[in-house]
Image 1 (cartoon, helix red, strand yellow):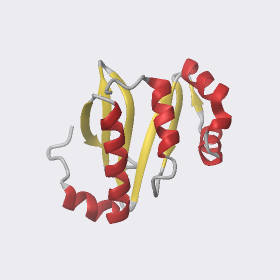
Image 2 (cartoon, one colour):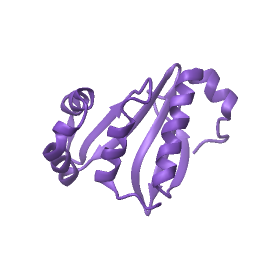
Image 3 (tube, helix red, strand yellow):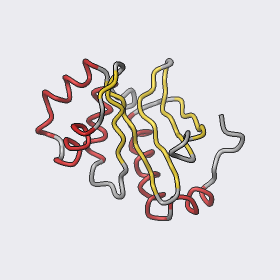
Length: 137
C-alpha cells in the first residue's frame, strides 16, 4: 500500500497535463457505471502507481501511472476471452491488435493499454462490461 496518495499536482507532474486529463476522464467514466472500491498502490517495477477498481475480492481493472505514460489494464479469463472473440469485429483495430499481441497466461490475458487520448474509451467500457455488468444506473 502507498503511504500517501498522489494529489493532482503530483500526478500532473508525473504524467503531464494531457495524460492526467485522460486519466481523470477514464476514472469518471468507470465511476459513472461502477460502484467499486478504489485502491492506490505502488505500480511495481514498470509503473510508479497502480489505481485498482475492486469489489468483493475481484478486480475490475487497474490504471497505472509513470513518467509521461498512463496504463489501463483489464484481465480477461477464459470465458471472458471467448466473449471478446465472439464480438471482436466490433472493437477498434488497435484494441484487436493489442489483444492479439498480449500473452495468454493460465489465468487469462493481462491486456495493457497505454491511452494517449479518449478514442478507445468506448472499447474499454465494452471490455469492462464483459467482466462485470455496471452496477450504477
